[in-house]
Length: 286
Image (cartoon, rainbow, N blue to C red):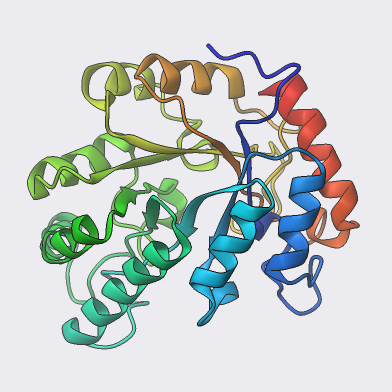
């Protein structure tokens, strides 16, 4: 297992941790300001959200690399299933391909897929997963041509219904198997997987070469909001080092991406303090 106690070059910031530039929350910084602040603190990478990029993907990607940061990924595809999709199948696929194009413009090697929930009028996950696999299969050749890998991110079961139809890494790997595209893998997010006692065995048996991202935060024992009250590493109950040990044992040696949605705590603190705290916690708890 890698030793981060004196080296945080594997640390990447997901910009959601500074509030998404949401009015009333977070830094309100431009991508350029976030890039500079991360570079000053020795972060190795950065992950953007589509809403921040607009038409400036190429320029922002170049700006990050000039500052010494790798663009580790892009969040995210549109929802591909469920009640929160925007438009019909054609519109979904157009937006899916646009997210791939943005990742390619940024020079981001990985695009995260948050699947979306259960198809209206259906029960259980079966029909939704079939539709998910079909849409990914149709987009996968475009992603491969653009040099972008697709990372399925299972979400905690509490999001089952509207935001996800896959709740475990095993579920995500089942979709990977069904699609069969070489550039399709999984993102393992502490917030969504910390509770899954089967995860180490699943990764050991099926995960090698298929883990495209590892996301850090913590699960607060007394969480106030399952969407917007994630914990800073070390403040919760997740076994952070145990999870990283399992991910790295399955061959992952890429960036560790800190992604904290925290409307009432970390989004309200000075961004420099948040970035400094992340470095300290990454070295001491991850």
